[in-house]
Image 1 (tube, rainbow, N blue to C red):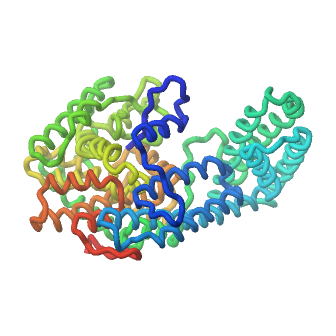
Image 2: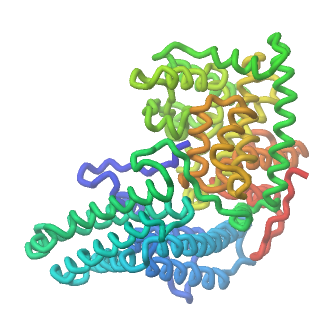
Image 3: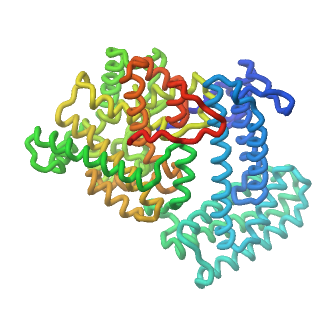
Length: 583
């Protein structure tokens, strides 16, 4: 799934510039924000302002491990929470009360995450010897403030930092300085960021200040090389990988306390062990259904039936056409049965792109959202990788993936997200966005009007088993009960993944690109929406289409807060999660 982006058409602005969006907001008369305590700031405006404020603060205080950054962000979060407590909650309508709870939870979670990051970065600082990281951070922060630069003095700081880097490197080589692999990996990322910051720092002054350019002719390139060399040393000695290794899976388990913190922000009243049990229970159901579908094909072993289905792939070059046809099938079904409102622009503007071989290591299956990105082998891939890619993206796996990724899944959802209450995108959560897409997998399984051959059922069940496994392996990994390699083996043995696709799934689950609950959020969020549908549609309180359109137009939020929105549940400013949706 792709995060939605704003598009601009000005030819004079660089693609990553944030100015066009601000100009667009001014053109459409975005409200002027009130910042005085004497003013009553509408909650929606408050959310928009906070979103911009945090974006600006994080962009300006950009050295992630810097105490200056931590101090300023914590100060901001605390001030906003104090201000929020004075807001007239009891005067709000239901939507505004939900918005209040969303921004309150968001700020509290940011504060908790800031503390966790500070604790990890303190360990990184110990590994790197404290002195040179702080001195280099101060140089970058001075550039951000546009302080007058003393080129000779700064060259001395860089030169002294290189000496300190050499000391740290030798301590690591001798074994007197070490760290956990996860902390070491975090250190290499910090060093890589420093290299980027210093290149930008140099480019800012270079040639505009001739004396600066003269003094930095030697220290700057030598510093960049030293930072790179230290990173390589950490990888080889502590992490025990080659610097160019892109295959080894290294993650950062957050522990039980970290999981509970994340669950609190998602309004999930279950503990990790209870959620793992839900995953196990759902897997048992899937396995029983897989046996039924396999028997219908004449197989006594469901794994043998799954292997048969994997061979039903299209020849090289034909996958885009298959995905196009499957996309049309899913969209036509939703419209024919009037299950949700599908705007014409949403349906007609789907674009298709191909996944690069490098990206297929992280995303072995095709992605959806703003567009379809198709995973299928290229001529440059090895013979084994070609076969694994085709087997993993066979017709029946792809059919089940299409309605998850496009319409009625991510593409439809993201169309609404960009247009209705877009300020709520700040609260994007896998339990909502991935839960919605998985919910349709459950719903279409139930609907007899959705055609399902035994092969189709096996394709659908493969993904459902995959979601179960995601709950189990991701939570057990973060609890410290499973290694990354054991997670790969679970996907291969439990679900029947190709090894390459299993490695891709685990890699993106644990290496920091996604939050710790992201993988668990697919099925758990889907189960929440599925349970809420029974409560609302099943009880005759809303029709199928009304329920789905209300969800789409609510944008992003934890599902329990959408439940409060659609049921009119009484809320207070200290609302806490209570809804045990699976009991």
